[in-house]
Length: 64
Image (tube, rainbow, N blue to C red; front, side):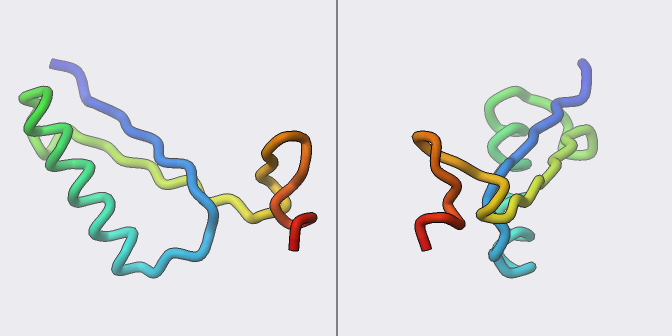
């Protein structure tokens, strides 16, 4: 079985505790639903600033 890779893209600002819990729960969900070994699950967190994220043609930083 190949390694499951999960990428989570979100705005910066979460605490280390929140990111730790997120990674643990996502890993558990992948293991439960796919049968992959926990040791093979890779989770990437990509954090973006509000000036690098836009909705409907407007950056979130411009809405502040």
